[in-house]
Length: 334
Image (tube, rainbow, N blue to C red; front, side, top):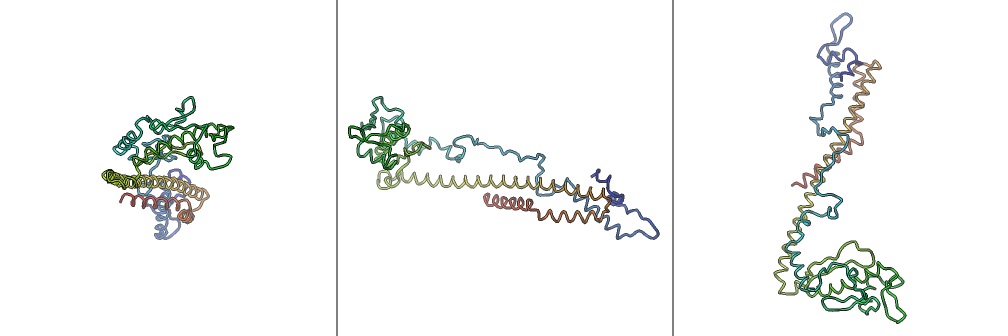
């Protein structure tokens, strides 16, 4: 403000001090004119005030950049998108019971999730450790062909071909598809054994590269039809209700964090916009004063500029963002 006083008319400084404007000529000074100049001078001074962020809804951000929000979870992690209650439940009672049931159904299998192609014997014929069911990639049974066709369809890309001996074998031209088909046949055998223990064993299709590992969960329909599993059904229902509640709480917490970050972002940009607006006002006032314009003309030009600021699209957009996120934050916390 001191730099503006250097180019301001003399009466501007006097008005800010509460002194009347210099009076020239005969007669008494015009008190009405003094009052108008006093009001307009203080209006100009207030419009150029940079220290008013304390009584506004804006932040007092000193940096021109948005502050980085600290995260307890690195986005580089493969499980960064998972809620904490899911990450914390690994190895809980429900998982232990499933693992015990898997061990009961397949005691000879060390890792039911491991791809079978990685442990294929040198002769190329895999046998189920539980029932010795053979899988020969060079001599597929009708059931095995049906399973592969269900995943890959029929035609040139079916993953199978008929050899010179009239047998149907896996097509070795695509080694990656070849190994995935072996995995599929072995996992399908495991799924048959686990089905007897009311477990669903899901495994990825061999049609494309794996994007996830196999999974196991209870077959609720089979459990409900067996009276011996009634206590387990009740426990699963209780766990499901608990997980639904935890998921709702996680979503509410997530929405609250998003809303708070949105409020902070909107206020940050409003602060930046307001400071730029004050700079534009100061530039206008300096230009008017240096051109020899008086307090009244400068105030009128400043009012016109501030009227345009009120309908500025950027300011209105960030104000709307702020109000929406405040409403979302209130709804999430209630």
